[in-house]
Length: 151
Image 1 (cartoon, rainbow, N blue to C red):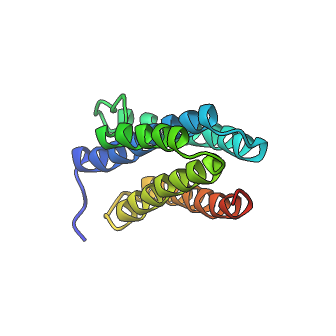
Image 2: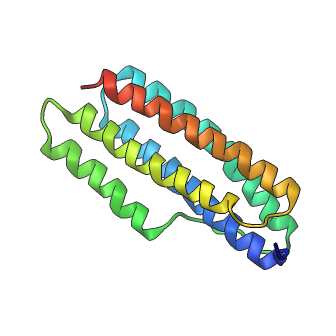
């Protein structure tokens, strides 16, 4: 494989950073809409973990001499709006509907990380991305377990 330029590596990392911002905002939105203590505790723990991942990505991008992004994807704002809308229109099943939306967001995050791992990233960056991809996959599995308990 051909080595990637710093700008190409930074573009991949910025995509992941946007995904982290999306996750942070999504979990914060979910906390305001859900009334299940287990889901709230889960979301709060993910916020801390994702914030740490975002900080690592931000620093790596800066070390490449590129400016890190400062916000998430525009489409993610629509997804958060969908979480809020589902919370408003679903009665009795609000927690389950919100957890389903969290799951959709986590599926997208896992896909974004796995797509990044297909690129010829420098070894140290690849290792960092792989660790974060594992965290995203664990998030997804945990939210699937929570989804079963909120039905």
